[in-house]
Amino acid sequence: MREAIGGTWITQLVIVFMLIFVAFLALSLNYTKAFKVRNQLMTIIEQQEGVTDKSDGSIAIMNNYLKGNGYAVMRPCALDSYGVSNLNSPTIELVTNDKKKYYYCISKIKAPSSNNAGKVYYKVNIFFHFNLPVLGDIFTFGVNGATGDVVHPADHLIAKEE
Image 1 (cartoon, rainbow, N blue to C red):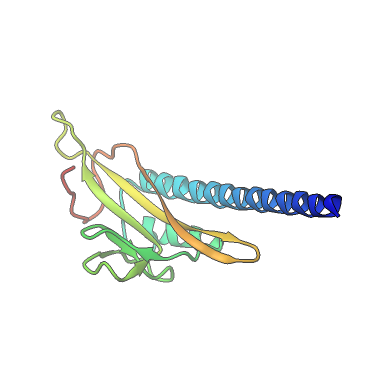
Image 2: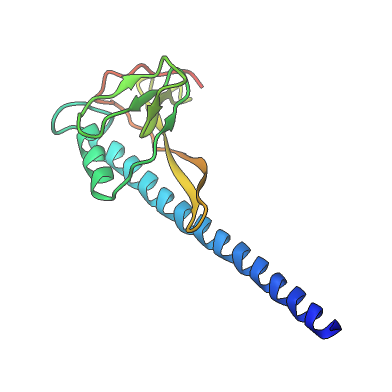
């Protein structure tokens, strides 16, 4: 009887560690995908020299990239940043409501530089789900990053002081 109880305990312990391993693997895969998407969005902003909302601008390119990769995570953005709530439209809007959900958020920040007053950089924030195969979506995390300096941005976004 003692060996049967011990075997059951060891089996339960192995199952718990397997669940922890699967959760860690799911988290790392989702986090890696989110970093890849974030880096591509920052590259597009740098190549287009700003956030433009024309039909061939950086917003349209980023939206097409996200649609092509099956990105569908939405979350509220910080106030006074800019967010995209529709991937089928090349428009970006100022966030004034902290309850509305967006696919990604962008903030334009004045670069701390005294030699070039027009220099800015952009902070990009995207989101990803932490989901397990059986339990589904558990948490939604944000992944953010900053672009390199853009000397003469080609957009109309208002830059904030950092």
